[in-house]
Length: 458
Ligand SMILES: Nc1nc2c(ncn2[C@@H]2O[C@H](COP(=O)(O)OP(=O)(O)OP(=O)(O)O)[C@@H](O)[C@H]2O)c(=O)[nH]1
Ligand SMILES: [Mg+2]
Image (cartoon, rainbow, N blue to C red):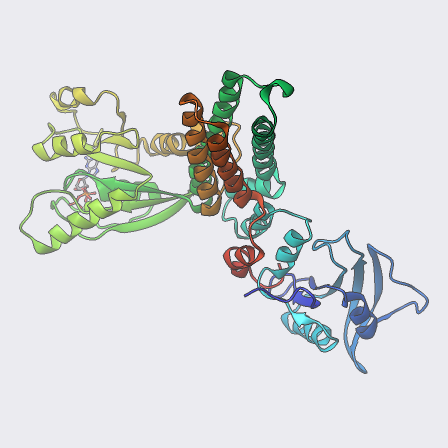
């Protein structure tokens, strides 16, 4: 449900807990009158000027609540674009809740989750992607995610989408003019120039979609599944990565039955490693469950480590797994490099020369850093070299994908020499899809889909 925008809202804007300073924020038409009611400046003659701190005390009738600094921000030069008052008090949980209570008693309503940011969007202070980025900056779990969120907050992403939208609007205007007037009067863009422009826009949007996946990985972290037949050293590898004995290791094939998941932070990215049961045909019910769990985890892996025992020749099971898993998302980990390599080991691997591989010794923790680096490069670094801006929301992806679909339909239509009326329908759809990414969605949509997930005070 949409909150009432006529209300003046208040909330504690700083995190709960002990802090040197805490802020209660008010936004709305009554902010200043409420501040006048509850705040007594030290120097009686001072007047509220925009963006100026005033020192004084907050009272609940006669009862002193806190010694504070108060800052008034006149519209439209505030975070929400409305009249905003921020009260900087002493940051204890109790004091803050008392300050908030006085503001509410003075006539404000407690803000709904995300309502400050929601108002900021409605009053044109920030756009949707920036509002979402606020939540992301606050929630960002690691450095990479933080810089991605900041990119969005700075509006880089929306600037790009808006620029693409402008180009399409311009093209649409030309095309509509051609429908309305006879073609001699209009300086006509040739069909090929127009096609060229469209395909450039499609290319740019597909780059952004690729970056979406990377953004997801940076933000949520990545999952790496360790798999292979029994006894090759999967659990030893997990332990070597974690530098502690997390998983049971034994020379008895079929030791690991369950999946074990542990997360490390590597160069600012959280990487979850999942150790799985050794994959083999088995009559043991428990082991069978373990094997199907392993396959389940493999489905959602960002990267797969297929562990092989290089001191032995590849078994039928190894070969089957190599074939099943041969893909750019797989690394062959040749374990037990401390033992003599079996003479047939490399020979058997010949058909898989395109797959990345690395020798390691999990037992002595040799080659682990190189492996981690390889994982990092595989998932992150290569793609980071692109200059694309990263997106983080499913909503962005959907909007961009729909835009591409409509643009492709438009391109096909051009090739088939369809009439301009048909082409403009697709173009309009594409423009609308881009608009769902940066704005112009219904207000109810905005509130329900985005802001209601924020915490109060943002
Ligand atoms: N020499 C040598 N032995 C290793 C190495 N890595 C693991 N092993 C041994 O190989 C045996 C199996 O190791 P695990 O880590 O339990 O193997 P696993 O793949 O998890 O086995 P399952 O859980 O049964 O599927 C143990 O005896 C380990 O000590 C290594 O690098 N060199
Ligand atoms: Mg194991």
